[in-house]
Figure 1: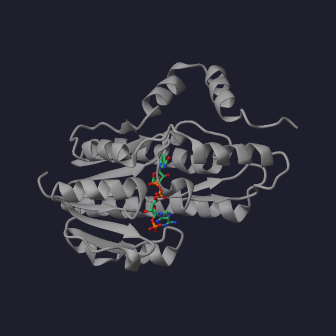
Figure 2: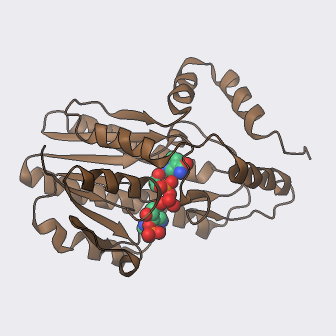
Length: 271
Ligand SMILES: NC(=O)c1ccc[n+]([C@@H]2O[C@H](COP(=O)([O-])OP(=O)(O)OC[C@H]3O[C@@H](n4cnc5c(N)ncnc54)[C@H](OP(=O)(O)O)[C@@H]3O)[C@@H](O)[C@H]2O)c1
């Protein structure tokens, strides 16, 4: 596809920003979303549209935006945030907000894009999940659950589109150096006495960690996947992602859990 019209949710920072840069460089017409369209700089080929995944009214407005009046060839569901919370102490409100943004609103956009693609006879839809859509990490349980839910829905959608010109893609990044750990994260129930040490160790290791990939590495895999006309569903992206996904499949649960537990719970005291 030479010059496509591509819609990217969450194009203002991190992985989405890197993808938008690549798509503009390749000459595509890009519509990108953000909660703060007035703060974004105009660029040739790029249109900013407001979208807050936690507001039904904002999602409604986005689905009625004139950007859908012309054919959209590709929709990338990238926007999302992470909730860091012990399972036992997260507030109901925080868990619902996490699912509202990462799952329910994303699936509303997915259904809208599907109707658009069926009308136009073709299209490509992608969800940015995570390796955490195929495994779970302590304190990321609710975030990981939203990504597992997306993985299941996109896998079903993949079967449902096999007989069509619609391609369904999932991108599974590992830890990526973006604004995710700063503006993209929320916490809930973090003062639970059983988890204060574990959470402070997690915060320290996220700040000092050196294992994260550059977002452009992930964006490069996304760009390749978007224009891969094969019916491939899943693409691992970034350092350690492929290896962890392979180990998750190859190892018995107990072995895999022992490896993850040892790696991520080193700083936690037992109570
Ligand atoms: N970083 C990682 O390690 C990692 C790993 C695997 C998967 N991912 C996934 O990659 C995607 C992008 O994350 P990132 O790492 O690039 O983080 P980021 O730098 O925080 O970017 C997140 C983007 O999503 C938008 N966004 C966040 N919450 C939103 C909401 N409630 N409503 C609408 N838009 C919202 C932000 O836009 P505005 O703030 O401008 O509205 C921003 O453009 C997410 O789905 C994340 O789960 C990240």
